[in-house]
Length: 176
View 1 (cartoon, one colour):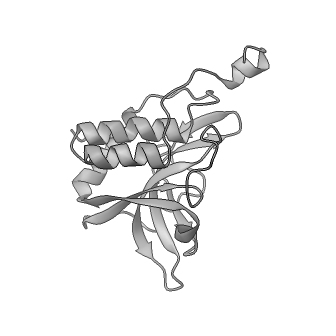
View 2 (spheres, rainbow, N blue to C red):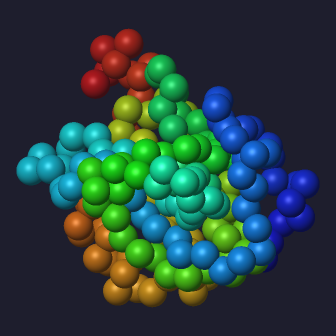
View 3 (tube, rainbow, N blue to C red):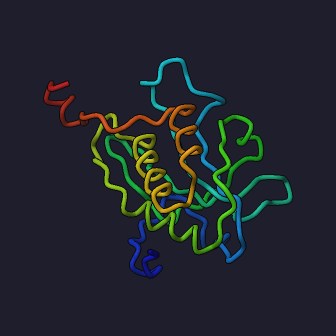
Protein backbone atom coordinates (compact mmCIF):
# COMPACT_ATOMS: atom_id res chain seq x y z
CA UNK A 1 0.00 0.00 0.00
CA UNK A 2 2.65 2.51 0.98
CA UNK A 3 4.46 4.40 -1.75
CA UNK A 4 8.22 4.72 -1.33
CA UNK A 5 8.80 7.93 0.63
CA UNK A 6 10.65 9.54 -2.28
CA UNK A 7 7.82 8.83 -4.77
CA UNK A 8 5.35 10.95 -2.79
CA UNK A 9 5.39 14.45 -4.27
CA UNK A 10 7.09 16.90 -1.92
CA UNK A 11 5.22 20.23 -1.78
CA UNK A 12 6.23 21.57 1.61
CA UNK A 13 3.95 24.23 3.05
CA UNK A 14 5.24 27.71 3.74
CA UNK A 15 6.61 27.72 7.27
CA UNK A 16 7.03 23.92 7.38
CA UNK A 17 9.34 22.96 10.26
CA UNK A 18 9.59 19.21 9.59
CA UNK A 19 13.40 19.41 9.40
CA UNK A 20 13.46 20.63 13.02
CA UNK A 21 10.75 18.28 14.32
CA UNK A 22 10.55 15.20 12.10
CA UNK A 23 8.16 12.31 12.63
CA UNK A 24 9.67 9.19 14.16
CA UNK A 25 8.95 5.46 14.34
CA UNK A 26 6.88 5.66 17.57
CA UNK A 27 3.19 4.76 17.66
CA UNK A 28 1.22 8.00 17.90
CA UNK A 29 -2.30 9.18 18.62
CA UNK A 30 -3.88 10.63 15.47
CA UNK A 31 -6.68 13.19 15.57
CA UNK A 32 -9.11 14.97 13.29
CA UNK A 33 -9.57 18.64 14.19
CA UNK A 34 -12.40 20.88 12.97
CA UNK A 35 -12.15 24.62 13.55
CA UNK A 36 -14.42 25.91 16.29
CA UNK A 37 -15.85 24.03 19.27
CA UNK A 38 -18.77 22.42 17.40
CA UNK A 39 -20.64 22.39 14.12
CA UNK A 40 -22.12 25.75 13.25
CA UNK A 41 -25.85 26.09 12.82
CA UNK A 42 -25.34 26.69 9.09
CA UNK A 43 -23.45 23.67 7.66
CA UNK A 44 -22.84 25.52 4.38
CA UNK A 45 -20.39 27.90 6.11
CA UNK A 46 -16.74 26.89 5.71
CA UNK A 47 -15.13 25.01 8.58
CA UNK A 48 -11.49 24.06 8.18
CA UNK A 49 -10.66 20.42 8.95
CA UNK A 50 -7.30 18.66 9.26
CA UNK A 51 -5.75 15.43 10.50
CA UNK A 52 -2.71 15.62 12.77
CA UNK A 53 -0.38 13.85 15.15
CA UNK A 54 2.08 15.40 17.59
CA UNK A 55 5.80 15.23 16.74
CA UNK A 56 6.93 17.09 19.88
CA UNK A 57 5.70 18.98 22.93
CA UNK A 58 7.75 22.06 23.83
CA UNK A 59 8.57 23.12 27.41
CA UNK A 60 5.88 25.86 27.34
CA UNK A 61 3.20 23.32 26.35
CA UNK A 62 3.02 24.28 22.68
CA UNK A 63 2.96 21.28 20.35
CA UNK A 64 4.41 20.46 16.97
CA UNK A 65 1.66 19.08 14.73
CA UNK A 66 2.40 16.97 11.68
CA UNK A 67 -0.69 17.93 9.66
CA UNK A 68 -2.48 16.45 6.67
CA UNK A 69 -4.90 18.93 5.14
CA UNK A 70 -6.10 20.72 2.06
CA UNK A 71 -5.24 24.42 2.37
CA UNK A 72 -6.79 27.43 0.69
CA UNK A 73 -4.38 29.94 -0.89
CA UNK A 74 -6.19 32.89 -2.45
CA UNK A 75 -8.54 31.44 -5.08
CA UNK A 76 -7.26 27.88 -5.06
CA UNK A 77 -6.70 24.86 -2.81
CA UNK A 78 -3.49 22.86 -2.49
CA UNK A 79 -2.33 19.76 -0.63
CA UNK A 80 1.11 20.15 0.99
CA UNK A 81 3.47 17.52 2.35
CA UNK A 82 5.28 17.86 4.64
CA UNK A 83 3.28 20.35 6.68
CA UNK A 84 4.63 20.47 10.23
CA UNK A 85 3.64 23.50 12.31
CA UNK A 86 3.95 24.82 15.85
CA UNK A 87 0.58 25.13 17.60
CA UNK A 88 -0.19 27.15 20.73
CA UNK A 89 -1.22 24.87 23.61
CA UNK A 90 -4.56 26.71 23.89
CA UNK A 91 -5.47 25.75 20.31
CA UNK A 92 -6.80 22.31 21.23
CA UNK A 93 -9.52 23.79 23.46
CA UNK A 94 -10.69 26.12 20.69
CA UNK A 95 -11.51 23.35 18.23
CA UNK A 96 -13.57 20.18 17.98
CA UNK A 97 -11.23 17.17 18.08
CA UNK A 98 -11.86 13.50 17.32
CA UNK A 99 -9.46 10.70 18.31
CA UNK A 100 -8.91 8.53 15.24
CA UNK A 101 -6.70 5.97 16.97
CA UNK A 102 -3.13 5.05 17.81
CA UNK A 103 -1.21 4.53 14.58
CA UNK A 104 2.15 2.97 13.79
CA UNK A 105 4.67 4.85 11.69
CA UNK A 106 3.70 2.66 8.71
CA UNK A 107 0.01 3.43 9.20
CA UNK A 108 0.78 7.17 9.27
CA UNK A 109 2.71 6.72 6.02
CA UNK A 110 -0.37 4.94 4.63
CA UNK A 111 -2.52 7.96 5.62
CA UNK A 112 -0.10 10.28 3.79
CA UNK A 113 -0.17 8.02 0.72
CA UNK A 114 -3.98 8.00 0.74
CA UNK A 115 -4.02 11.80 1.18
CA UNK A 116 -1.77 12.28 -1.84
CA UNK A 117 -4.23 10.18 -3.90
CA UNK A 118 -7.35 12.21 -2.98
CA UNK A 119 -8.56 14.05 -6.06
CA UNK A 120 -9.84 17.62 -5.73
CA UNK A 121 -10.61 20.65 -7.85
CA UNK A 122 -8.08 23.37 -6.93
CA UNK A 123 -10.45 26.20 -7.91
CA UNK A 124 -13.64 24.79 -6.39
CA UNK A 125 -15.67 27.10 -4.17
CA UNK A 126 -17.29 24.24 -2.32
CA UNK A 127 -14.82 21.37 -2.48
CA UNK A 128 -12.54 22.60 0.30
CA UNK A 129 -10.99 20.92 3.30
CA UNK A 130 -14.22 19.30 4.51
CA UNK A 131 -14.98 17.57 1.20
CA UNK A 132 -11.31 16.58 0.77
CA UNK A 133 -11.16 15.22 4.33
CA UNK A 134 -14.38 13.26 3.77
CA UNK A 135 -12.75 11.59 0.76
CA UNK A 136 -9.60 10.86 2.78
CA UNK A 137 -11.57 9.40 5.69
CA UNK A 138 -13.53 7.22 3.24
CA UNK A 139 -10.23 5.85 1.92
CA UNK A 140 -9.00 5.31 5.50
CA UNK A 141 -12.21 3.48 6.38
CA UNK A 142 -11.90 1.39 3.21
CA UNK A 143 -8.36 0.39 4.20
CA UNK A 144 -9.43 -0.48 7.75
CA UNK A 145 -7.50 2.40 9.35
CA UNK A 146 -10.68 3.73 11.01
CA UNK A 147 -13.99 2.05 11.77
CA UNK A 148 -17.27 2.67 9.97
CA UNK A 149 -18.92 3.98 13.17
CA UNK A 150 -16.23 6.62 13.73
CA UNK A 151 -16.40 7.62 10.07
CA UNK A 152 -20.19 8.07 10.29
CA UNK A 153 -19.90 10.01 13.57
CA UNK A 154 -17.39 12.48 12.10
CA UNK A 155 -19.46 12.94 8.91
CA UNK A 156 -22.46 13.89 11.05
CA UNK A 157 -20.84 15.93 13.82
CA UNK A 158 -18.41 18.12 11.85
CA UNK A 159 -20.27 17.80 9.27
CA UNK A 160 -18.32 16.67 6.21
CA UNK A 161 -20.35 17.21 3.01
CA UNK A 162 -19.81 15.42 -0.28
CA UNK A 163 -18.62 17.31 -3.34
CA UNK A 164 -20.71 20.10 -4.83
CA UNK A 165 -20.00 21.63 -8.25
CA UNK A 166 -18.80 25.23 -8.40
CA UNK A 167 -15.53 27.10 -8.83
CA UNK A 168 -13.97 30.54 -8.55
CA UNK A 169 -13.94 30.61 -12.37
CA UNK A 170 -17.72 29.96 -12.38
CA UNK A 171 -18.29 32.95 -10.08
CA UNK A 172 -16.12 35.20 -12.23
CA UNK A 173 -18.06 34.13 -15.32
CA UNK A 174 -21.40 34.65 -13.56
CA UNK A 175 -22.34 30.94 -13.71
CA UNK A 176 -23.10 30.62 -9.97
